[in-house]
Length: 269
Image 1 (cartoon, rainbow, N blue to C red):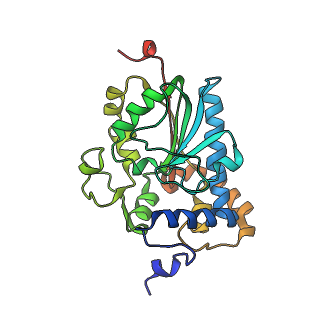
Image 2 (tube, rainbow, N blue to C red):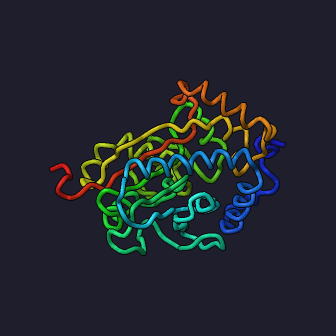
Image 3 (tube, rainbow, N blue to C red):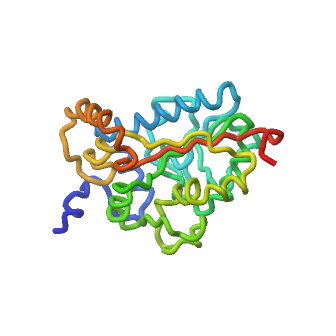
């Protein structure tokens, strides 16, 4: 048996044609395994802290797109959870390409591991400009593009690729149009940053950082693989992550990008 098949969690359906059932499997894994939950807790608390710091007293809804198995609402009940697919624990069905939300009704949009699934980022940014109030914004966490992440993401998920050379942003402009490109956030916000700035004068990248919980993420098995270390090691692994923080650009697996919706009058000419 190939090693990757042995490591797959038997409690998770690996039939990607049944996305709704797989989402529920991931929800169960996240709720019952403290190590992977601790990783997502760090994500939740970090995006909320940045929301408070970056967007101040801006009014409006807090929306989570692509929430899937997310437990964000368990920690922050004022968040409206949504996904493109319905699920019992989600409040709305929302398509990031065509948001069923009123103009300037949103304070912040959160997205954890969902941006690389958006088929047309330019349409998403147009929707952000429409629905987010000036002073509010978007906070995204998505696959990072360092050496370790490139290695893992290119080989662990058969239904997704990691191609930093995709010629365009849209799904139909990628080299392999049959698979989601986990490098999309790198392409849009780093490789093609000049294009992002030119096409979105009312959106400004105000924060980018590498998340530090990569040791726990790998050893927890994420949401698809077996946990490799006992739950009792979580505290010690946090210490290891802090000690390894200078190596985050090499070892990081996720990064955060925060975008502010600036008033039209303040947008670059």
